[in-house]
Length: 432
Image (tube, rainbow, N blue to C red; front, side, top):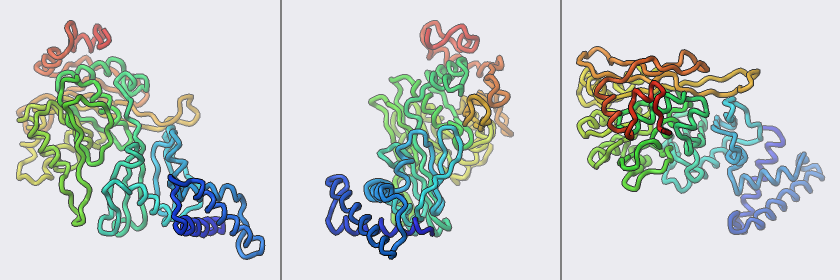
């Protein structure tokens, strides 16, 4: 540990003790807290002049850092406040982050794993979730619901390992996704049309590809007279819902290490209610099997799933459903999903070169597939509707249409004069 880092740790501990002794509170008495910090720093500098301690390079900066540690979130305070920072990574005493250009950068600041663990505990305070050796993995939405924390501690990990992802999906619409070059205007109009007809859509892609952002934009296009139920492990979707719609969030881990209400439980209760569209934030496990019951409930559903392609997404959701352990074969599950999933929207991302004018992270829809019901048990039958040969290339309509009955269902849901054929051929758009 450097002498500067050592001085910071000593001063932070002394300031915390003095503030506690005086029973000061950063919210109720900020000046009292600042005075205590200034006194501690002044005392340290006096001893440094006598050769007892190392001199401080910048006393004012030290006071600022201690204030952040006491009243804010220590070395993470500035990163939380910076709108250009999208995701923060903590590994032991090391901090790095991804900014809005998509580049990974180091946050060079003197800190310790112990201080960062205290910051994580402060983030979790008031969330009804805990992180300790008995519950070594935890997720929670933090910072007044503006970010999601995922943290892992020993014995699961060798050291503190945490990620804070800021929510950036609140205001996106299908139109703004066109402005971001994620969708073509025709593809955006097509997805708008699918949202009118109570269809079932999988949004797939790698981590950070924009799945949740696009699903949020799609949900905003769903008519207000539809009852939407959104279930998530940790709430990440923040969109205005009709008065008769709801958000549900899985319970935190109990002292026994289980959850009172799992994501699967939430899907079950939604299907027992009147629901037009069931949205699962991310399908990873047994909750996928409950989606097969959505067919009998007559509702549409939307969810995200990690996959490398649209067809891989279909395999992933089948595998997740089988892992529920309900003693059903993959052929049966595949057949149910083949008859219930209407479309798969796959996204991808890459990093444009620094020398490019629009360098940085690029997120785009690579393909939109229609799933065709089939009696065959070997595989899904799909039809590409839109494809993008490569990231950065134009998105193209293939000339194909969804199955006839699905096309008719969408046509019936569109305003007078609208049709899916008109959307795909450019003769009609939602703005008309």
